[in-house]
Length: 144
Image (cartoon, rainbow, N blue to C red):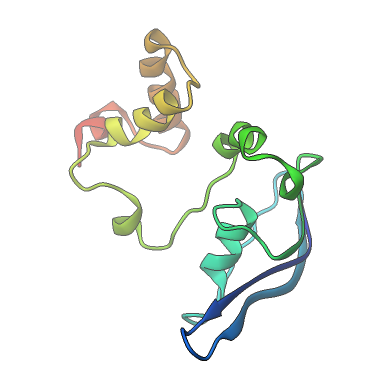
């Protein structure tokens, strides 16, 4: 499903004395369908930079990321947009990831609507299917 080969993301710091930071340096791994990968490490070690580089939210300096047989590091921005709905980062801190003002229903509906994954009539049905998949019921949809 995803193969990462020699991924690198470097950036410069400082104004007068430019220093190169090798935030991600030669990372390689593969994840097959049905497998799960957890990424752990101390603060500042490059976990978030790796995730953002995999999704091309920041451009890698080098290496290759192949997702479902397509080298996404070689895609144009336009072509990359078609892949983005199928990929996402899940941050450890749910409070930073979810809007506390939104109800559960809105949090699930919004990405379906934005990415055009369901028509207006199908969104409600799909939301109910998704909450059932994770062991919730309809009464949870109105919670914040």
